[in-house]
Each structure stands twice: as C-alpha cells, then as structure tokens.
Length: 125
Image (cartoon, rainbow, N blue to C red; front, side):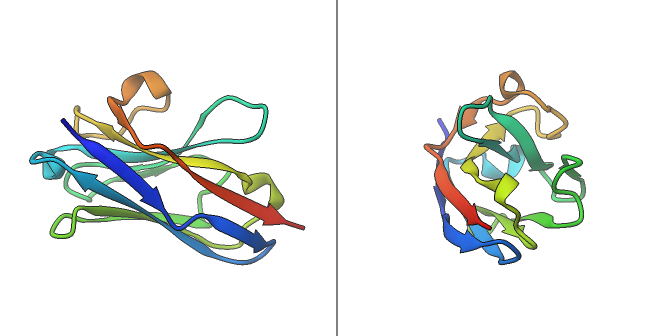
C-alpha cells in the first residue's frame, strides 16, 4: 500500500511562488511514477505534472509548462512541485498521486492508483 501526504499549500499573490511537497510511504516508492493533479472550484480534477520512476522524464500540462517544475528525491521519498509566476487561475486543491505503471504518461485520474488528501493553493490578484 502507498500513502501520499501533500504539504506546502497556502494563500499567495499573483506572481509569487510556492513549493508543494508530497511525502510518500511504502516500499515501492522508487518504482512508481508520481503525478500532480488539481481541482479548481466547481471544476473537474485536471492533470498538472508527472515524473516517471527514474526521474528522467517529466510531463506538464500546457497551462503550467515553463512555470512549474516537478522533481523527486527517492532517498527522502518526496516529490516536489515548484510553482513560479502563479496566477489566479492556478487556484485549486492540489493532489499528489502515484502510478504503478511507473511511466507517468497518464493524463486522467483513472490512470493513477493512489491519491493524497490534497492541499489548497489560493492565488489572489
């Protein structure tokens, strides 16, 4: 079983930065791809970024590419999402998720196997 716990959310102004962390427990962390999704108010959960099991491949949605960076530290079992140049449109609950397929190419919630509880990010204009 894998458990994921997000942290680092908060209230910031447009243009600011935030760093989200996802702490992962479980023996197979290094074999999972890890992704980040977000759910804006009143909308469906959407893909943000993912990193494959080795950290060699990263994937981003068009809306965050160039502003967000995903990284993983297998020794600490932590995946980070560095978010720069935040916009009000980035306001959402951000979820960390694990994919047993290890590649992280999934773009829908159905392609991921384990989920955290989420952390709120609010960006004011």
